[in-house]
Image (cartoon, rainbow, N blue to C red; front, side, top):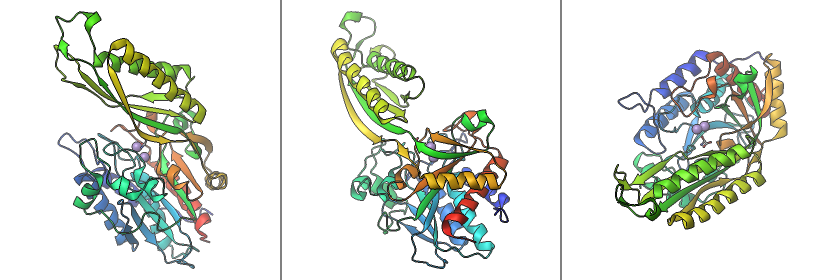
Length: 412
Ligand code: HGY
Ligand code: MN
Ligand code: MN
């Protein structure tokens, strides 16, 4: 089975080249969805895909589908590989990009080997997986899977007050294909783990069997601006204090869960944001996750109860807005077993695991059997420029993706 391997230099060179696109003056990598930097990254991937002889289609939410349809049955439901190439702020170079570029590498390796798959193979780069500029995250794949209407998605107003549809048109990626125009026979996403498990266990590959639930909210806390020096504590209606109390409560909820629930306040702003003025307003995001739906619901309920009591005790008003809510997802057991089998055939150890991060695979799993392959993240770091995966692990993961693709796409 392992008679074919990917071109490691080509894959690693492209990961580096794409990782160089979207750097600011300080060298920080940021390619937020539908930004100018995102356009440059998209253009680069499209050029590589077209250069490899794939047909590139862009759908209405800007998803890029690079299609290899020189198959025995070009009309058969395609095998879909892919991930995303948008990034968070001050990002690493592997998150998402690795899976998209490895998918393209698999197709190019098969084409160069002169083999013909039974069915087409599609490499997808989904729009706005990160959700940093426009919520929810995994938006492009959610629309592709029919979980969010394309008009509603295009009308999304971003954290910077721009409208996603306008921005996609501005960068030239407001495509015409209907999202979901190709229903995959199966979807496999190769991704860095972004956590500490594989490195801790000394195992090079993860066969991801499930993915935890995600709850995103934005809270707007309104108090009363007042003088920092003259206002007695008992008279304060301090939005900043309320935000701080919520942050510490969230950590208590996570600790109480014995490690299954994780909670993050990633964005927080105070108004008027002046050293001698009691904050009149605090705007904060809450990211709650748990592999178990009931525990995730319990965490949301505990937060809601606390917020109600806090508003009364501190004399502030607290408005909550849901930004994203995805239940835990179980991936396809057959594909997970195939991933393990292909790893074994290459003499690679693997382990089953849960994904702590959200991924496009959780959305495509709504319309096709799906699963993921993880490779280790050094120090478990991601969403950070220190994100790193050893070249040997990147190549091993891509070769296992190649073997899994050959099985699923019917390549001898
Ligand atoms: O939020 C996530 O887990 C993903 O990185 N979008
Ligand atoms: Mn990702
Ligand atoms: Mn990410």
